[in-house]
Image (cartoon, rainbow, N blue to C red; front, top):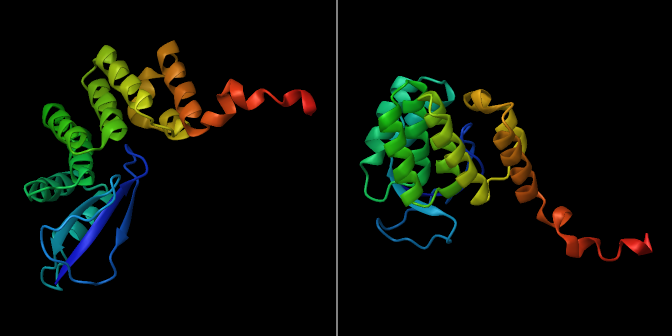
Length: 196
C-alpha cells in the first residue's frame, strides 16, 4: 500500500512539523498535486512488524536517538524527491552528533528543496556548534529575513544560547516578532488611532 504524505513546515530546530495524511488512499507513484507550500512524497508500507522507514525515523527522532535517526533519515534522503522535512531532520540529527559538515550539507539540501527559513535556522545552530559565530549570525539573519517567526523558540533554543546577549541576536528575535505580527508594526495600521 502506498500512502501520500503532505508535509507543511511550522518550525525547525525543535523541527516541529505538521503532517497531513491522505487517509489510507492509494496514489500513483510520482504524481505531485500538492500545494506550493507542501511537498509530497510517497512512502511504501513495509512489513506490519516494523512499520515503514518514515515511522521508524520519526520514532527515533522523538526518542532523541540521534544515531538511529541520522541513519534512517539518511536512507530516506536517498529517495527521489525526498521532502525538506527529511533533510531538516537529517541535518539536526547530524548536528546533535557533532557531525557538522554533513549537517550543513543536509541543511543546504533542505534549502534547495524549499525549506528556506527553517534550513537557515538549522545552519545557524550548526555554525554555532562549529564555534563560528559570524556565520551563525549570517544564517540566523537569513532565517528571519526569509520569514522565520517563532521568537519564543528562538530565545529558548539551547542550540543558540551562545548567541544570547549579542545585539544581533536581539535584533533577530525582534525581527521574528515582526514576522509573526506584521500588522502590529505597520505604520499604516496606526493611522486611525486618533479615534480611540
